[in-house]
Each structure stands twice: as structure tokens, then as C-alpha cells.
Length: 225
Image (cartoon, rainbow, N blue to C red; front, side, top):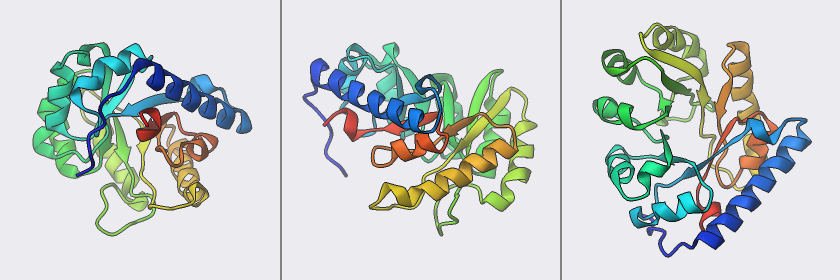
């Protein structure tokens, strides 16, 4: 397990946030987009729970957690209530009921069992993104592009659920440019289906994701270290 990130200062995190936002703005400008159309989500999987007040004071408002149990702990912790939470990790169907009241949006809906639980527990206004295994990687979470329409039909039929977009994690790559084709492919899938939100891009490749249409980038260590 990666070491927890501790000892953050408001000044350092604020400076990092400003640098990342500047990179987002530059990438958006290169693509002829407005930086206002891109949300910065701070991934906090490895951030110690005691550091949450620092994030809020440094100007971070939207955060994402990968694990349902940690989401519960962090939302209830000091500083957690000052932040808006999304769920961005692999979602087990048995955890759907637990996380729904805690989050603005679920980024990682990618199985029939999760859709079934959403149908049982979602309230009006539940926003979700469908996770797409854009590169068809063996053993990776997400819906195959060829199965996307059938999956969307099922999810969009749920009472109280609004499918607002797609999410993906491209194959690991040393060069961010290697992710470009996968981001472009996800953007094309979303555009063809009238889905406005695209959650794609992380610390190593978010500028490329912005250039290809990301509306939410999930940035972690670059905000803290």
C-alpha cells in the first residue's frame, strides 16, 4: 500500500492547485476551450484524513475517494463536510446504498449488479458516469464500447438516475501522448450519445485529456507533493 500523504500546508497545496489550474487553462486554450468547462477533482485516496481541512483552506472544493469505507470516514471527519465528494473507484454493488447519500456523482458505474442496486436505492437527481473499458483491457473494470448502448439503455431507464457522461482509465503509459487516442475515443462515444460529461485524465496525463475534451480531471499527487 502506498504511504499516506501527511504534513500538508495550506500554502504549498494552494500553490500546487494554482499550477494545476494553469496547466488546465493552457491545455483548454490549445483546444479552443474555456478552462471554466473543466472541473478539477482532487483524488484523496492516499491523503491522510487529518489533512482534509488543509485542502478546503487551500481552495479545493471537489474531491474524489476510491474506497467506500474511506469515503464514509472522510465525509464524517473534520473538514470533510466542507468538501463536495464524488466516488471514483471500483464500486461493489453492496456498497451502492452506503455511498449514494454521501456523493454528488458516481464516476465508476460499470456492471449490471451496480445498476441493479442503483435501481433499488437511487433518489431523484442521482448522477452517474458509466465507466468504459475503452482499450478492452483484460480483467479491467468497465463496459466494452460495443456493449455501451445496451448498458446505457438499462441505466437510463432507472427511476431517479441521470446518466450524465462517461469515465475511463486508459492503459498505463509512460508517455501521456499514448493516452490521447483513448481519450479521443471516449469523447467520440460521449458526443455520439449526447452525454456532456467526460471524466478522464489523472496526474500524469490530464493536460492531454483536457485537449481531448475532459470536463473532469482527477488529479492526485501533483496537488500535494
